[in-house]
Length: 176
Image (cartoon, rainbow, N blue to C red; front, side, top):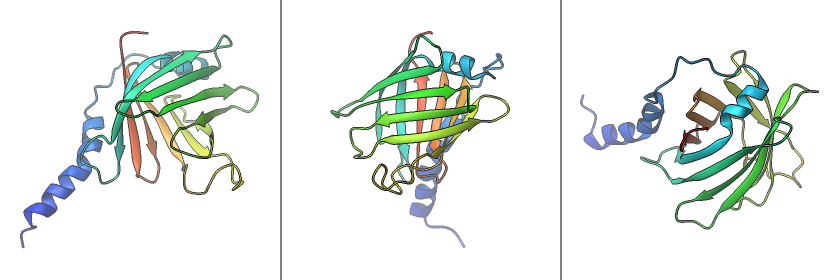
């Protein structure tokens, strides 16, 4: 029995964002395995596209600037969106005492702060983040979920929700 054409189109549209990211060229160059090197590679200016589960294309895009702090253990970021007045800001850092990464963020469209704690995999190219606060006064349940930052190469990384509901693809603008 043949599937209706509209069903095939819906399946294609749902899988397209994942396929596009999979087509991002990956470099064979040596990439960071230490927190300091990972943060240094992420410093710079990035274009990003947001993808949402069930959406055929990007639902938003913009630019993120990530500046390395003087201690080389924190990136301070600001981002703006095309066509929206949203301006988000935050910190992506590493705590050498605990061996954990952290994200603190203030997002225009969310009433609660983003507080994430993460651990890197063995390669140092991926960090899995969990929501740090279960205090309902600080973060409403369900707004933030477990997510993963994956460094594809020095000019591409992505941040995706583990529940599949969204992903952000970053491409470097210019050179570090």
